[in-house]
Length: 140
Image (cartoon, rainbow, N blue to C red; front, side, top):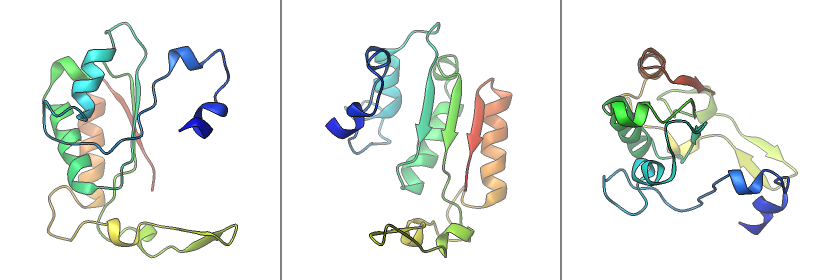
């Protein structure tokens, strides 16, 4: 946590929030993303959300909750999401970085039968976010 803040320019630190805790998809839970967001921001704030917690079920639940909440939609300007989809090329990628870390999704990919787990599903969810007025982006 302290390493993260040491990389942020001093003038930006008062304007940023960083939470490195496990998220819950349960509304009202003290680590629920949207509950925290609603408590912290106003509609006039610029809000960028990066969703990359490497848990397909929680991520999709959070995106579905967002899509079903006009109040939340009105708070978010940019949305960045690494949606883990079935049969992604990243499932099979193994890259050595400084000989110490393997990159790739490996076991973090949903099964073929999981809801919202295909690349087409991902594009559809991103389209719905865009149609709702959020600039939504993904990467794989």
